[in-house]
Length: 76
Image (cartoon, rainbow, N blue to C red; front, side, top):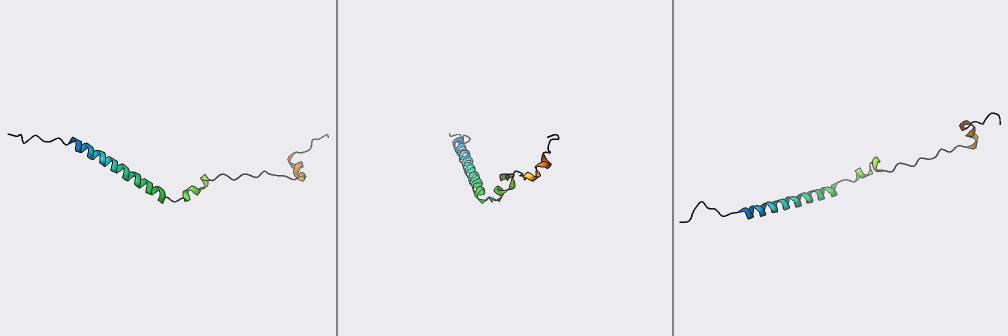
């Protein structure tokens, strides 16, 4: 007589199911983040910290103002 308590092993089906589930979850996660990437506004890229600082202009003085910057030596 056949033993009614002996069951066929389903470990291969469980392994395949887990592998397929992990693959499907990874694909859906990738698609979710890929779609979020395109919906993102680009205004954050124009924030002030991304811009190059303005070049500072050199302070130019006239010849008439030089005596205030470098006083003449006494005795010459």
